[in-house]
Amino acid sequence: MTHKPDTLLTGKLTRVKLVAMDVDGTFTDGTIFHDSSGGVIKGFSSGDGMGIELLRRAGIKRGFITGRSDRPTEERARFLGMDFYIPAIGDKSVALREVAEQYSLTLEECLFIGDDLNDLTALEAAGVAVVVANANPVMMEFADVVTTQKGGYGAVREVVDMVLAARGIDPVELWLSEKDRPVGMQ
Image 1: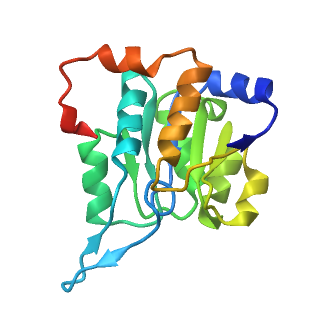
Image 2: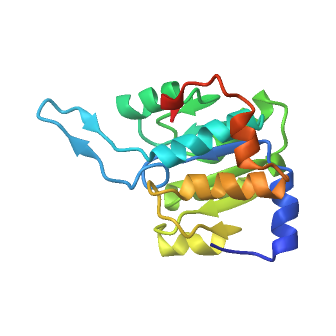
Image 3: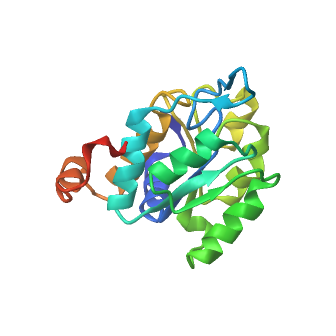
């Protein structure tokens, strides 16, 4: 992963209390299938789902802010127990500000993960701006971090591991702290 100087980034990451992300191209690989009845079909990384669960266990708010509204994303947000799901939004920075306010957080305590131009306002507003490896190349200049993994292929989990490491949280210990959580949650 490429990013700005380590000490500055680590300091920013230790303050993260909310992780918001785009969906298509970030939490998925961006491929959208339509079935014969016009329904949408998407694939999601179970590793990224595990990352979302680790954020929950660490007490970090998490959710989707996306320009699309579709049933698979809504269902995935519900299944993962996301703290917020904001679909069909134009200016994602408006949604990020509202979510931060809802949880009494500053924007400096928010991390946003995106991949393309429709994520730009949220990336600029967030305390930590992350773009995935397969992001539009223009987006790289707006990022504090560019993941090594592509969207839909572990990029979100990579970011989660970074946040946990900056806060001194061992993901194995965090996982074992709630042994009664169903294994199929991711």
